[in-house]
Length: 413
Image 1: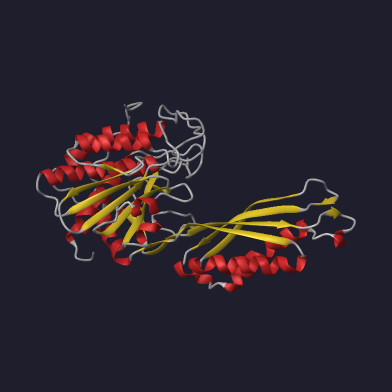
Image 2: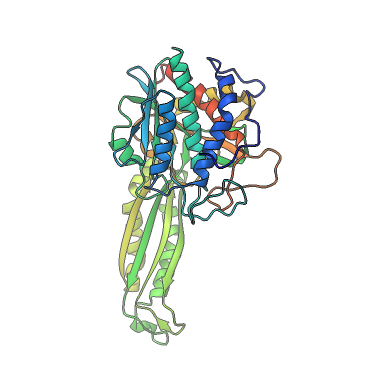
């Protein structure tokens, strides 16, 4: 199955870390190379959003071999799996899909699928969650798992509409009292994690403004709606007005990414459009954004005489980490890696559909360091050469095992 054997040794417990129960440190060291090989196989065979069938089947087979009973989601491109027993469930989520991007790395496990690549680290997320499941299965067999844990392998995180609402509708959060996840973060070296309470990532919506009106000669703009001028006003004025209509503490960012109008230098076009994103850190401001932004656009366009059509499309809500959940995973990460390896995570204006789970149950997402310590080469997310220091997989599994045990033992959920 794997494309190549990993060369780097799998990391043991860092200095100052607490040992895992049930001889799991020894087990993790023995299974580490296998987990890295699985990650490389997934990396070499990426599947885009809503087509994660082989990836889901692979994970289901690995869990079944461990004596677990994974359940494929109705469409077969995702799965959930419970481990242990109990009325309260602690859940962990990973995303399965890859990006529509060419993989340009010169490595043996480079993507074999044209214009599809795991450039956001979902192969690592999936492998860490699989490792968590296999480790907890060992504990459960030994009678040392103090409750029930649910693994959620979700499709279509990179797609709009994303896969989280469909997974939730399938019953994935039944009996769940808390949920956790991690995300690759190349700005931190492997062996470190970033934790934060409160706003973590932004809501991410899209807006498209289409204008139309009588075109004409640039010598006679007064006989037209002068669409290029009108689009310019939308581009400049709407974000500026938005900044004055929303509390600056809400963290609102409106940025245009595409504009099109006309072709000839001396002809005013009859139609054009501009498209952009709206990112917001505050839930209440996010709820009010569609109505407010649509009104601002119409008010700005009205004096120009152009006809306007506004399409405001919801993407994902903001990820806002629960205070207690963040404290639990911070403490668990300190136990797993050593307290000096847990740092405060920065707020990101990127979007993450883990937010949909947090709208239903308390939980937290952390950042998993994936950079190579001491290396000057930085592989940013969503770039064609993205890669990770594979030691991060072992660190991620250790953190999530400690988190599961801590969350099951606390009365916070």
